[in-house]
Image (cartoon, rainbow, N blue to C red; front, side, top):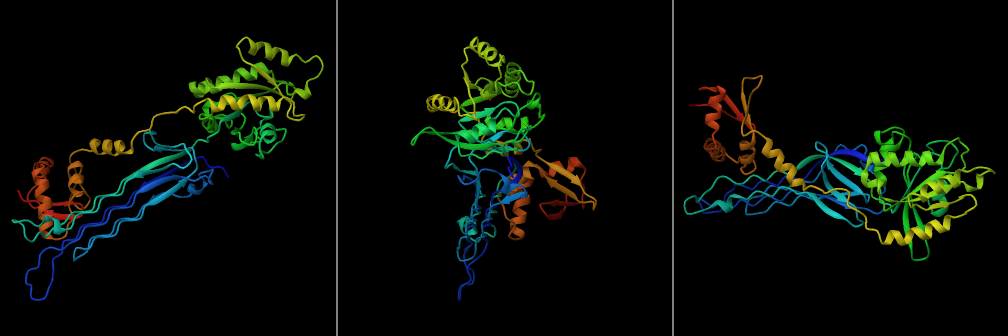
Length: 428
């Protein structure tokens, strides 16, 4: 089964919390702080695997998470770092933000390996907060949260040459003839239900990759037939082989077919329509006496400065000439970049900036739940090891304007307020 698009949630590991502990030694009444640091959370890493050519492995996976870092321990012991989660994908995989469809990562080269989501840093233990003023700090840092995002993984196959044309023009037969691909062949429309890649060997040292894309029809750019789903797979190609059935056995006009397919390419992508095309008149062996299809198409294309290649896949006529003329163009044509990618950090920054400073809601129990940008920024720093650290946490929020916001919302003496699971009574 060929799967070329999946939606999945990704989360890097949270950093482990720093420890708030103290030395307990014999004959030492008040030992100093000895809390170790928490370990860093694991990263989410994408890696291109040459042995994978579909996203099938992700079809039934909803979420992938890296390991959290381990909390720090007493005696200055650091927590272990969380293990990275390496996600292996086929070459040509593009990672997009699910909400905005912005391109975040383009894995377009064999051997690509990139860190996508960074794990949260481990929090510092209380051993770091000792000073001449605070000799016994009873608080430590909270490990920073990992990054979480919902993405769309999209596969766009990497081929040097793409075969396009109406159904049943002989594309599958052509790719089977010139490469080791084994596309299904039959005399009915949409025999090819998924793209096929084939390696074309020009000689012992020269080769290129060709993709057989399912037949297009009018309206393909809008999703009709199988077209829209597969047009994306030829966006990265360098050359297009445009096959037309020159025989006219199905009552089709080759010139009309040529125009309509190019119109679909243009409607889908202006860049795609401007790629160099080899127009191939297939099924030359079926031309009957008096059939003027070839002459008419050749004249029409000649006026546009386009060469028409007469081919019969059955008799092997003209196939070698097409292949030889293709290679020199491929090696001198740079694969164009489809679109610029956006740093995933920009997505997270925009999410935080779009969040209100304060979010206050009254729940069914009559408790005022507080959240928002101000709370999130502090939560990323502090861990609640004991009462002192909780008081310190609330004191910071008060400086940021928590008290005024609660009063604006109508919170009065004795009302219960909850922040990150901590409940306290509000006192003016």
